[in-house]
Length: 609
Image (tube, rainbow, N blue to C red; front, side):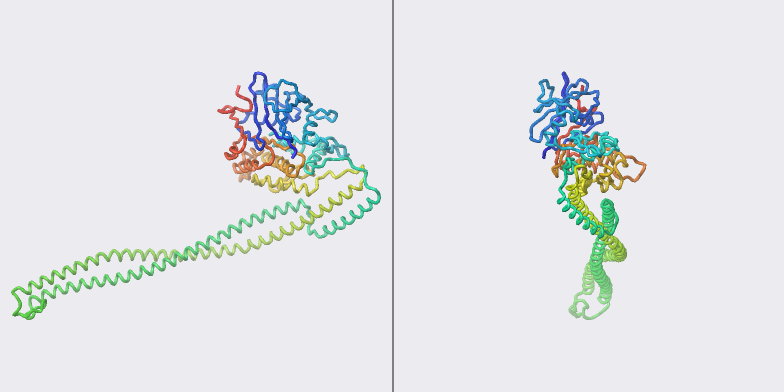
């Protein structure tokens, strides 16, 4: 890949400390306080690459030399030296980062003119292998050589141009620049300039080409007959985007209903399992309560019998004459006081037994009370679970009723998407055939016939995909289905041109266009400087808001984070200039400069006086 790399920007002057920033070969982030010289860096880079003027800031007083270090495609270092308000640029084939006093290796003019062969534009384009490329400059077919400013304009984006309504591809709103701007974009996307038209084919070759063109025309007519709609490819892509958005929306709704259905089934299984376990426990507790109530009755019956034995024993022992009712001894063998003694022993035995039974009964009653309480609680919980299961069954029925129409709508959208995709495929085949027809027709034209000024749909669609992938990686929600409209020479997103959007959307679309163009050129080996400089690319953007009276303010950190992390994967060299802080993980992976302004640390681009 033949491209340049920025190495450093340095301001030097006699008796002045050098003011310098060094650029990482991949990503450099410069952020911090306002009025600290951040935007001045982007403007200085533009000035050093052939810009016409640079509005100097007060901090630059006393600095007489501006040095821009470059790494050429062959790996060698190059230093451009230019004084403020000067058209002369001195070139040194080494890396210089301080005040320079020796003569230059080459001296050129900053301004590009067709009459001068000693300009920075021709010098650097020759180093990049682009010096022979030409672009169309008017509708009559006149051409001029490619200028360095044509590429710098699409690579270095100062803050004022970032938010301006003017298209990113145009230098100004004058009609005279539109043809050249369109030719430059076509050159960068296709890799072909505007060469001289050849003399054409002979008569036999023209007859063969005419036959081929007729055949292609018939095939194109047959393909048009297969189209079921009169929509253009762009309109079909827009409708496909709307259908896909509806599919995504209904997919989300269907997923929510499905999740609700699954969650409800899970809740019912859980409640059913709990009810089964509760029924088992309720049966066990009920059985225990019944058994313990029988045992309580038995204990109370035993106590009643013991009372009766005590009373009966006393009566029988004192009043009955004959054999001893306690030991069975006949009167002649009984001792004096025998009955009273035996009665006392019986009373003691009965009391002991009664005390034991009373103690067992006292232990049993709390247990019965606890089990009865458990039985009541389990019964109440059982009632609650039965009611809960009834409510869950109602929710299941409602969820199933919602799923049927949603699935039907999804099927309709999927069928509509298939129909649109088939139509787009036919359009693509038509475009390919028309491209072949255009080539055949171009081979037979005379030298006065001009080639088509438009970019082929196939190439434009590939670039649009890169642009959309860039915005998707940044997760910007408010610029759906972005594309470059070569007829209006502006970016269109959501069926609205960039010029008709707020400054926040304009800045993010400009940033994405510049980044996507560089990515596309690098991926397809097309002409590009190889680096981009973005000043305030996303700081003024904000996602959709509920209050339409709100204006663009600082964008959400979510989009900022995705923007920076996506730029970490950018294959070329990028310099990002912003006010806000980048994410901490980005700071740790790239070269960063934080300008603190009046605070502690580095005050800005220029050292503190």
